[in-house]
Image (tube, rainbow, N blue to C red; front, side, top):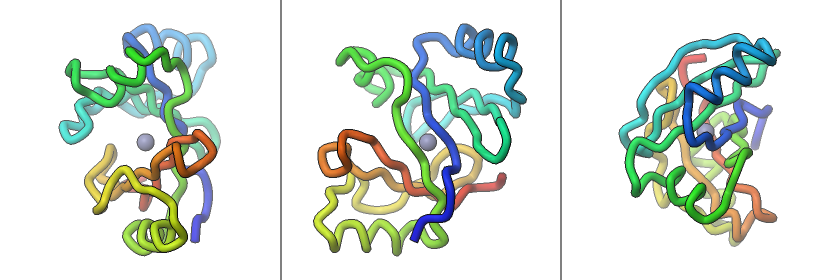
Length: 135
Ligand code: ZN
């Protein structure tokens, strides 16, 4: 059902500070920054090997990232797995009793189609199913 890790989402208070670490110090390849309106986040996208790292900065107080940080969350926010068919993977998970954050797939960064599974059903890890988008 799932093929590989697409990206790791990391919550940051300040995207510039995140880039100063992951791009400038650690030397990951920087692919660009985009705003994902649906999730109220500014996303700095980096790449190492086949895996992308997405640095997520909230653009609004009611962004999921703002709530994550306000609740004391830091660092790794979610893992994203590539699925051939996000809708089918979402339905298969729900059919096995996994709670989904999203009842339907929705747009993510980089032209991707995504859906999130609820960490209460997934060993505490917020899991994103994605078709991988344009990259
Ligand atoms: Zn993601």
